[in-house]
Image (tube, rainbow, N blue to C red; front, top):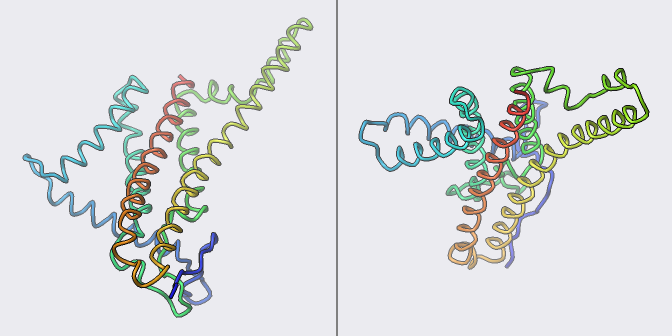
Length: 257
């Protein structure tokens, strides 16, 4: 008999602490935080002069993003400043994306029959928050380099003070229209980053839940290819978000120089 769980875009309120409701996505975020913390502490305890496989993988990951930032900036100093947040984006999103693959996570339900944990990135609020953090970091970094030059990309009203002819006036209108498009583009970056990550992870989670819930016979062997697909897609989405964040942050910083 089919036992497909209820699929809902908004998170379910699975626990209540007093008057505070805690959703499955929030519990998933808390679980991911502790899993990531345990992973990093374990990795730190295993670090040595002769690296093991895990250390080689982590050094390769950090080296990959470090090289990308160095190539983007042409500056080792700026690359080192932004490296932690880019690697942090990747690791956090990667762990969030793979939460449904952690053993027994999908088998824990509350009294109402809802899953207690949910992949945090399948909730739009988290992906939107990550995109806002990226945007905040991007603008603060550019402002610290050259605030006047950076803000000049979004406001060119000063050109009207330099108007001496009809051509200058038309050019000022055009430049301010382009500045308005820059502002719209900044909002578009936030929406595209958050919506892309949310849509892909939510769709993957729904696919796994539906396949495993069709019948008792489809809970083990049948979903195996879909688990690998989810693992692959989750890794790609974490990489895409991190690479785009790196591109946006470095691009804004270069333009402010």
